[in-house]
Image 1: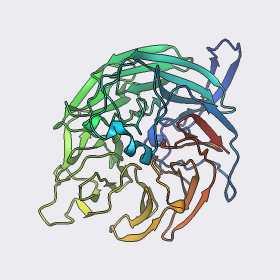
Image 2 (image 1 turned 30 degrees about the vertical axis):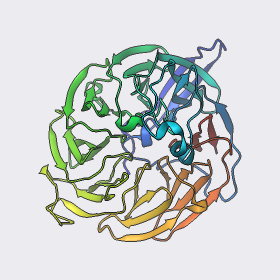
Image 3 (image 1 turned 180 degrees about the horizontal axis):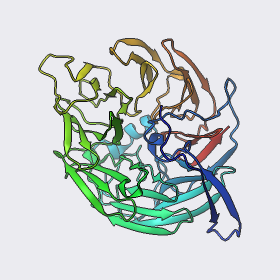
Image 4 (image 1 turned 180 degrees about the vertical axis):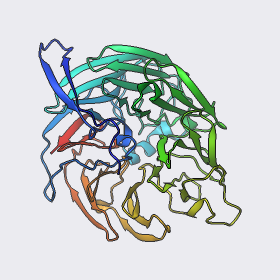
Length: 457
């Protein structure tokens, strides 16, 4: 997998804003975890130095309680860990799957919130978990309700060498901060009305270029009132272009796919997958005929885009779309492949965790682990996850191993390849829920629970 384009080492000094009177010097490198799923590598960190054979449950190097709650992924730049959070004036923590399904508020239309929420960006030290600063981006009463298992801060921030961007879909608010916590610019958008009041989830995508004027920040707002993909100048927050599609809610995050010199933004929304030209926002290709929307995101390698998605009552489609095509790629009735669609199938799409590609294989996780040959779509294995506990956060890849945390906080490590080899390590706290995607950098893997961030080394 190609490394991040920002390979130049950057040295910065931060003054801590909590009155501690200390500074820290950190190194920002290509192996940082700068946004959701790590950025363009899509969940792969090729140079991390996690222990080679983790067979015993590791002790946390540190645990830091985070004010409020959020399923946003922690991101890492040098020694800085950034995470967003929603701090309610009233109310508790998000529930797990069974607790959320059984919650009375989800058995009909949830009550509209009446109490304000403070949306925050928090910066911690990767070395020891100390909170360096926190800033309140906006305080308001949410315009719409959310599912009992979701949060008001599920969107993961994104960071460059010197700026961190935080988006809060429930508030319709986007803000940029420097690494000392000083606000650089803000952008107000409409709060998102999501299907069944499930709440928002799509994260930012930051695309950095050697020429900073060509860098772009992508924000997806697919909801019941409109479906818009915004391309924003990260330097000042100004809109560069927008692409609209038929309205309908989605919780997936777009992916940046650079193939044969073409830069595309590929999005999954209600009923279709659409790819846009990064420079202009014009539609390049579209695949329709899907009877579902997207909670999980897509994945890609140098040759194809892969996805599998499902929702209650859908056929749970799974597809592989070859590079180099434009126009309408929708399959003819009863067809399972074409010149542009390498293969497809049904009753295989995932719920929340996004898939990963490692070598010749494509993997999906949830209550089960499923492996496919990426070139043919042939199912290699389908196995029950260790312990049988749901995995909601996305998996991450280091070397030949795939790491994830189940809802109970136990670390699961799956060895890539055609045989299912997995180990479950009891790292979780029974009193907390784990739905966030982990982040990997250097010798550390971070995971967020409903209460805190944990660091394992």
